[in-house]
Image (cartoon, rainbow, N blue to C red; front, top):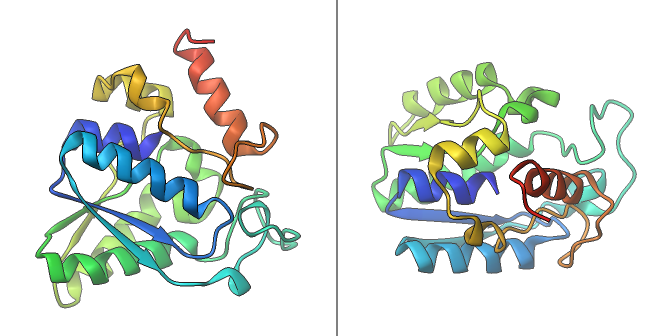
Length: 186
């Protein structure tokens, strides 16, 4: 939902979806393809199997003892930003827009300070890509409203952390349902 709202709001030339071994990768790719097509954004898919490195809901294993939340995957956002920037350099992008929102602050790699540090590092390296998170201070509902996202596009979102079909029990599915409810939808 967050990435869809950002894509609609910011209308980037490119979108990047990364299959890093998460259980819901196929559904996430399908959703990104549909939204990118609808918004006339060039969509790129990167596949890197890191499933042996993950933990928790997103890879179907037990969470590590240091996991702040059940869907936490060690260094995931750092990995995803790095992979996206590796592709972005070849596309000539100068800004990578990341779909983190305020609730992502439940883990360190979902905070403003994390992205500020990461942006400094990435900008220092070849390519000088700036990392931005326009929704980092907003809730998902606030981001959707700020983007003026047509509600019909939300139905393409896949938020489940555990499968390619919504399980209706994981934190991702609960967030999706809560967001629809807060927007006045059943």
